[in-house]
Image (cartoon, rainbow, N blue to C red):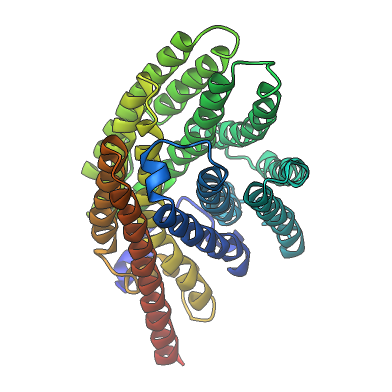
Length: 418
């Protein structure tokens, strides 16, 4: 740890507000379990997926293991940690966090069981539980943010993402009504998927990276137009929703605007990294993820199912790349609280704990998995789709190894200070 760096470093977040580490890890650890289940399902269901049988119950279950169980579970864990430190507000009580987590978890498990056994009553009940869980979580985070004095692009983007999360479950309800002929079934499905990936998770990523990328590159990120990608994504979202009352053409126009949001975000990323005082290999993973998001947004103009496939791999690479830095930081924060020095020494302690090139491993394996998925889908090669599931499991193994290394290094650092 460089003492001069520590003295001159001025963090833009208040890590003294961080919740206890078990709160976000509760979500993230469970997210990993669901991701493993999703990967196993892909391995087993390689042929049906390759043949485009997206309506089969077990395929739908695999998709929701990934979206509800991994992506959304992880996102909730990240924001549990992130909202207090970024907006300088007290964290939620651990008891409240656990209750919200358990309600959401029961909804996801019930949803999976309903699909597995074809029990529509269980499916409807679990859908209601999920809706309640999402609303409870949203109200809690919205209340936290309202107490903050920090308003700006990040603030508005997170609010938009929370609204998108709720719009996703509402559109899920519309999906059920579409089976009764109230709306064209596939149009509602497209909007449901687009809202989940483009609005809930998309706006979340666009907002969170405005803090993470400057921090990892030690950049001031000046003249990067932080609001532009968020505004474009918001306009694209409104057009996608309008397509429910108009036509698929309006949705294509919304997807075109999303392409603009992705391009603006890539330009923003490059500018931030170029202004930085150091280069972190995390950007190898982040840049790869944005290349896949660009491919996904372009494919979305043609309403191609491959837009979803490439987006899934993009989110996976992005999350694992950021987690290769965030989880060691959380461990470092826990250790640093027991060591002398300023509270933000955790930033520097974390740098000595993680594997610098883990994001490169994530990027290589992620692109390999994406290529296997795409080629398997296009050529109807079930073995290739199954192989992509094996690659996904390999990614989890590398992440776990990275975490174990971080924890061991933290233990050694703590012992050395005793």
